[in-house]
Amino acid sequence: MQKLKLKDLDVRGKRVLMRVDFNVPMEKGKITDDSRIRAALPSIQYVLDHGGSLILMSHLGRPKGKPEKEFSLAGAAQRLSELLHMPVTMAPDCIGPEVAKMARQLKPKEILMLENLRFHSGEEAPDKDPDFVKQLASLGDCYVNDAFGTAHRAHASTAVIAQFFPNTSAMGFLIEKEIRELSPLLANPKRPFYAIIGGAKISTKLGVIKQLLSKVDALFIGGGMFYPFLKADGVAVGASICEDPAQIKDLPKDKFRFPKDLVIADRFANDAHVKTILVQEGIPPGWQGMDIGPQTVQAWSKELQQASTVFWNGPLGVFEMPRFASGTQQIAECLAQGRAKTIVGGGDSVAAIEQMGLQTKFTHLSTGGGASLEFLEFGHLPGIDVLTNR
Ligand code: AMP
Image 1 (cartoon, rainbow, N blue to C red):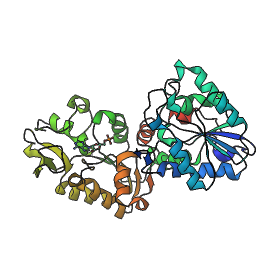
Image 2: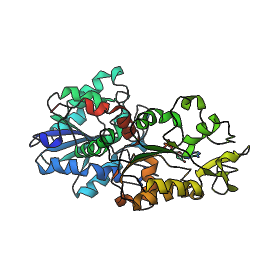
Image 3: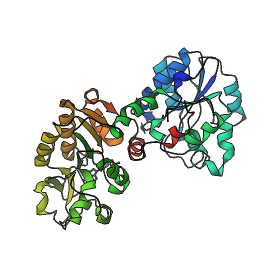
Image 4: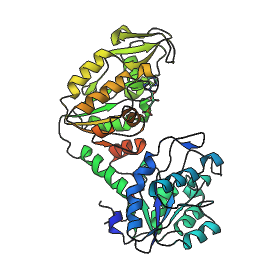
């Protein structure tokens, strides 16, 4: 179903209530990476350029339904103001009479940033507090969702609020771009089409793995995802992160590519004793698999060079520790050098690519890890389904 887009809305003189994803990483009160704020700039700029005013709403971190200073969005408002070279007014809350007054008084081309939506439990549990979403909706004349990173959550500001704007709920440019880049993977991707899935726990990605198996020519499994497969084959996994192998027992194995060798360590630490083993040797007691090995990198790179389309989600080892980042980095290098269309599904794999400065060498780095996986699994997302049909 085609959904209304920001450009379909007449925003002139309107108060545009826009859900953005300003859930930025912070350290000691400072934003360490502002890419999520930058990603929302095209939609924000469009509204300003077309004579609308903006009421921006987002969550930040995981406050437990009440105000917590460390999760204030004031820092994000400040950063946005620097990026736009214009004032951004910070509201003391996201609902309530004072905020409603500030929203009413907003003039065209002005911006009001609401305080963290998760300071109210009604954001994540909209059924329990229907008044919360009603109050939020009353702030704007139309609604734009541009928070792809939370579009898989059926929260007040992402899914429930749209019913208050039956004819004027639209997707912003960021969501539009994400859908444009991800949809072809479900339709008719250019072949060979390969997927690479890494990360910690297979249970979190089982649904998308099943879905991808029906689409791809091969699926490469690395990171902690691999150990249940190894255990199921009766090979010792030592102290590796390893979920119940029963989960993967019924998966058809013909399209999988598994590691041939592994970098293992005697502790979960960068300065641990390390050795490389062939998979069939098994992992000794007390040792754990930390990365894919050099033979795996070589074999996978050779096959990945033939790809026309690649989808990648999840690091292939404990890439946060430099000694176990090599597999992830070398596969990233291989994809960066190749000619395939490369789509990376959010989170840690995007972080690894950005750390290496390779972001311009990829076709699309998704801003939503969970959202991109759910979109590929189900073909739609709650935060998009509710928007006005075109
Ligand atoms: P995910 O959110 O599922 O993509 O998982 C990302 C996390 O998986 C990262 O923090 C990695 O350090 C972790 N990871 C990847 N490979 C391994 C491994 N072999 N053992 C433990 N953790 C791993």
